[in-house]
Length: 435
Image 1 (cartoon, rainbow, N blue to C red):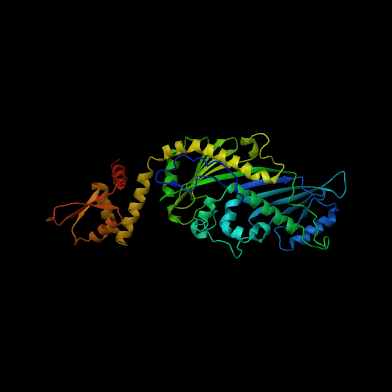
Image 2 (image 1 turned 90 degrees about the vertical axis):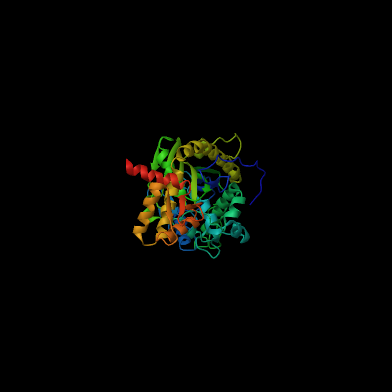
């Protein structure tokens, strides 16, 4: 990636209790870009449609074109199975027959590209000169499915994470977009009956203007229990923003993350600007700032910088966008976590303790009931070495769920108490029962 001199990125405020940032420089996720002012050779509509139809039957991301009978507009959508989407629209000139105006819309996901191929593979294989790397499931793809709750989420695998953290994502974004454009240019100008020599009929690399319609910038934090952390934020943060969409987590289906069962906060923080906080995995919280439309009008960019007339300005543009997202998220984080702290330790601690007790007791539900009753009433348990409870209690001490209380040597009874914050969590069980 090209190295450019930048000031050291300013850090975000502290994340949720018990979590630490995975990276401090924002990462680019989804982008929706539009390109206009491209060059097209003079060609009649029937020939151009026939060429595009033959291209769709070759190795390319293009589906068969459709043509509006009244206006003559040709639309070519992009197929699935590629690491980008969108469509190319070709408008015939009303005044000059044979001439066309082109508009390209791309749906891009930078994270998914890096997730699938990795920065090292991408550079080492010379992918910036080619285009096959933009297809899913190629020989050098990196399988990140095991690292996400869905098995399909845009989560960079641990194998790629060190390289991704050290890379400049503004530069990655620019090179990824240029790679997509080169891929489309190569595919759309393949040799056909209309274009037997493989000449350039549509130039997909040079555009008069580009713009970003939608964008998502994100940060991640890592810790022990993202599900409980986000759930606690949702319980206590409903007054932070104008709109909050909270989806309860279904613990009966804990290995699948969907829109239905993932703890996820969606907050309105500006005109067509939103923030999202959700449990990406059990160990990761993702924080996103989402720009809904007309991104340039919402981001403060000095006059004359990062204009949309040259694609080489895209990296500088992304710097401004990431910094804008950081400022917005920095205002939100302290308030969000101040409201989310209450209950987080107790909730997550109780879940961990009950899980440990269940494992320690195996299928003996009566033993589990006795342990939970003792711990919720007294905050501890006393046993002799030969007691039926002793193996379970011994296991709970080794996992630091219980801590041993020193007793006199002549005493046969061994006393154990709950570790903090487990004690306050179990005390809450007793309080609820008494109410």
